Image (tube, rainbow, N blue to C red; front, side, top):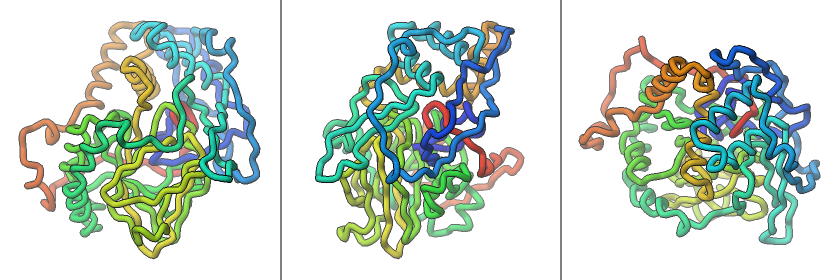
Length: 404
């Protein structure tokens, strides 16, 4: 929430929230440390042929007990000849074993197939879905269903940009054909065939994914993109999300506790009638236009649009506030290693080239750094150079990995 937005390959797959794989582990876990390599100058491939479990298990038929990480797993380094071990070594060398201790522990727990389950205090009488379920788990982060906006300084800043964001959004979607022609992966559905729990009514339009801006879509939504930057939002994914009339999303977890999710309501049908709403654990809230909500999607949650109109939101996936700056950087570096494995190499030249590649991927579009009036760009058609048009990623690729 990514948020987003899409990933292809199993370990390369920290599927963003915007691809929405709501996986319950039912088969033996993928073990990164089983991927051996002997040449330390050439990083091991993060790819695997391990079969993933189904993502459509009915949570109403599932009873889970609280789990606690095994201290032996937390403190035992991974095999150095494995891909997971190479990433662990690279994290330690860059950030230090102590500052990045929780991230190293998270990586080891993922490799061991650990599934963290923690029940939380119910608000009402029902406690069926009041628990956190995370396979990408950083130890000791606080867990609660909703975070109050007063706890997060950037929320009021972004809400002040709501009128401009909505005007820009409505102008863009008013010409669906033009938006489809000019944009990249416009209103893409869930990436995996197994993510049926989200139904066919959910789709996304990505602006920012794992530290990379979408050049084409930011040109279509410059005011929104600039607002994300100016408000200092600790986002790892940003995208618009639509929910079709009469659709619902089944109870599920996003399986990552170190990322929170935030929604800014843009178009909420039948507002005030509680027919378009989100439930985290046992706590139900209705989306409100112009208002931000922040919640933990590693807690079981569901959503429904019972109206006859489409609901639109701006959705963001955010680093958990309990993470230190070093820990955020280490997590982003882990993402980078999965995308560019050469970062784990022992060859300084190879690492340098990989770092330049990452720097290029993470660059901010000139449109968002130049001192220009982005309001002048609204509604203007932009020529697209088909030679450099991004290829749309195909659905059906699987992935439940770090940050899924």
